[in-house]
Length: 260
Image (cartoon, rainbow, N blue to C red; front, side, top):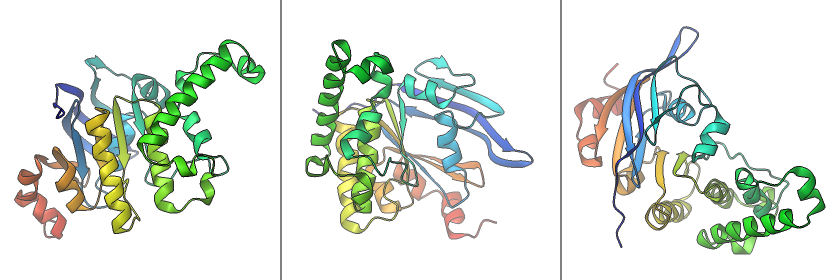
């Protein structure tokens, strides 16, 4: 059954972010609909990662509103964002390199665990049952992303492309409503990009996860995105479906470097 794009799940209104006198984002508004793949594109320094950092609570904008699932999110921090159902991968891989793949994924289940540290240390009764249940969920993600063969391998020993897939798996282990992907295909070869595209589409289609991604490969963006928002120098210069965006004169000028 084909996925159905639903109502607005995340609404960003008039977001402005400053660091001292430097304007990172200026009066940016766009929304994200449930089950869609929403791309954020723009030249280097456009404010793309800053926007993701606003969405998941790393930065707090000086102006604007964030409405997630109908609720206004004021002063949201990263823990609140994770608890609300927003997961994130990073431009630079942020895994525990000395831990195995399965242990990294178990870290992604932390918010789902109710027993305390002492109970888990004793590994008895409710704590044992809870950990076994969480491991079962992790194994489902491992199977889904086809990384069974490396599940007990320390992450630091894996090639770059597999590390990126493990980071995706750890984010999925949190069962997010919205998955934020910051350049998931950066540094990958053609084959690795094809694999990652397939997994992103499968996550969106089969799991129903809403995805917001930053990506520089325009071929990838145009192929897998439902809608695209374009930033340049911290301002929004385009928003629409891939065909609208790639034919937008202002977007073309910004990417060709003829606007400024």
